[in-house]
Amino acid sequence: MTDRQKAILAAIVEQYAEIAAPVGSVTLAKLFGVSSATIRSEMARLEEMGYIIAPHTSAGRIPTDKGYRVYVNGITDAAMSELPSGLDRSARTIEAHVNSQGNKGDRAIRSAVDSLVELTGNMGFATIGRELYTNGISRLFSQPEYVSGQHIQSVARLIDNIEPWLREAAPNEPLNVFIGSENPIGKSSGATLIISKFRSPFSDASYIGVIGPTRQNYARTMHLVRRAGTMLEENL
Image 1 (cartoon, rainbow, N blue to C red):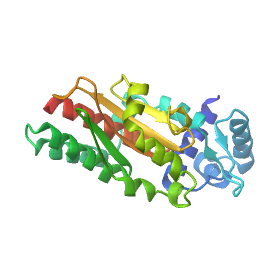
Image 2: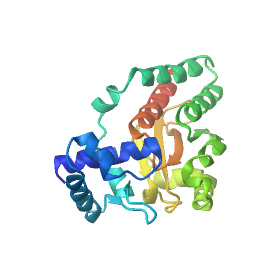
Image 3: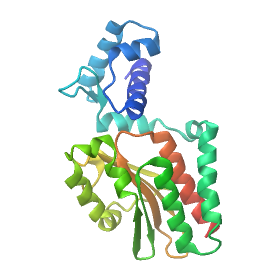
Image 4: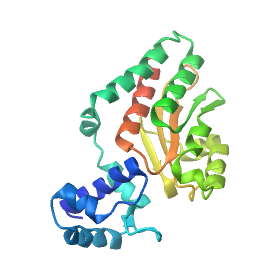
């Protein structure tokens, strides 16, 4: 993939996350300062490589799971640290809520989950010993992808199986991203799980994360989930 194709793919991912509609060549041509024909040629190549797809109802393109994976792999620590100041305010909101619970670990974890739900619009979850705490299912199902009901059963199956999912996937990094068909359960859900592993008084392998559509602001959500895990480990 050329640098320009990578940039076009990134633009499609980011535009689609913002407008929840397929991205057309005219929009991208304005963004890159080239002709629509040039963009269409590059988009055709990206489609041949399996990174984007054209929904049958639109001339625009949306990313595939493969395209999202390339994009997510390109999000570096440096890129996340250069995010807007508003993101720092969001991270401080989580920190304030966690700190307000003092040394009450279970309440601190629940508070962090609740904050992630409010800040990302996704469903949040965390392990507290043998208990799984969840919040924000209604927020998740209010996303445009799930209004038609097309993927609701598959997402619901994923939610019902979060605990065995965690045992099977055993995420072992401070930040883990499972995109769409990469999920061991709910492969057709069109959902992404972003998970942070952290140590707590309950377990050396505690988890906090969110479930949302594959269409989302990855850099922002990844940053907030990782910060939530880090804050909990430091405070608990």
